Length: 466
Image 1 (cartoon, one colour):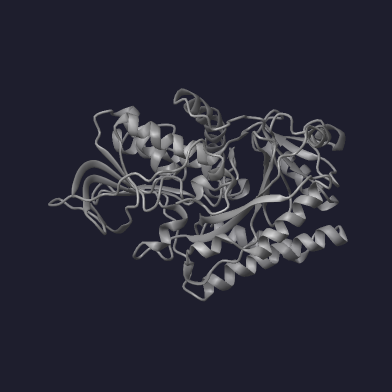
Image 2 (spheres, rainbow, N blue to C red):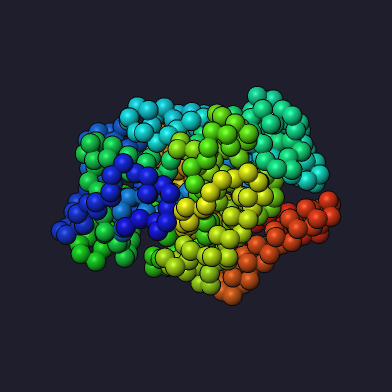
């Protein structure tokens, strides 16, 4: 009932006991499929706007079983679509609105956690992206210049030379880093489990071990219906919040690509280690390689560290065995010990799970008022903050339809990504992208120059963004 080997689940205050499953027909105002961040934040925000709403959450395992309880614990203002792509598609005004809303959301998410008295280890210490070779350093400096040209202030993002970066934290081979204050470290499983408890106090009904097998749209004569193996739910609105598990629903195989991201955690590190490497304010960290990595200092002084690299599985298949890959775990440990040569002890935890990557890398919030079907997701690994923002979008769209708010005017609202290509094109293209990322990183590290693979990756993602 939890991610095998996960640090987050093993450090909850108490064992997870599943809530009862749905056993009889239910009629509500809003039924939410998926008990992760998107579903639970949406239920909370809907109840805050209209306490009279009857809301049910249907979760096929236990709340937080998916990416919400397994991720790297970054509540960041990162948007999966690059700045240039957002500017090209939507223009500077929409770009600025999106940037400011995401930055505000990091703070307001922390405020919401405090208001609900959830001990999720939230600390907004910012984030560091290190340059560990000259190509990364040039690219990061250029990104800071571009961000300032597009309206970001030096307080939002700045370049730190090697000495300045070391005042925050240090990785081996660092040539400097960018720093942004718009990121917080969290314990994701504590947050998602706490949100479930908050929703129950608000009167939301949560049914676990309740797999939804089909979503049926409504019309003028009938309400939309969520069909489960044991019973069904009718509602005015059905919200699909299934993220990486979306492809397990009928007809949704090409909606997103489930991409596996894996993590490891170290033994508790000594005070001497942390005095040496820093991260006193719990800054999250990465470097600027193409094959993404991410890390944080946990409250109990471990290093929790993850990255991409696991292959995409043919047919958008999601299986529990894909959460484990000895090869990827070994590569993550090797990388972690390269970043921190003085790392002490052993790797104590290994886990992973799927994230949802849309074809154009853009998240979406959709509401069809005619059929009553709604959806939110597609965060490509940046869902801790985006799920909170998307939930506010959903709540505004359902409670005040036709009214423009700071949330409903965001560019991913009413945006529907085109479907992924059929197999084997999908398998070939995604895994080729992973191979290009590895190649580009090897060339940059060994030859201290950019490679053709970097250019091909830029073209691939720019093409996907259109």
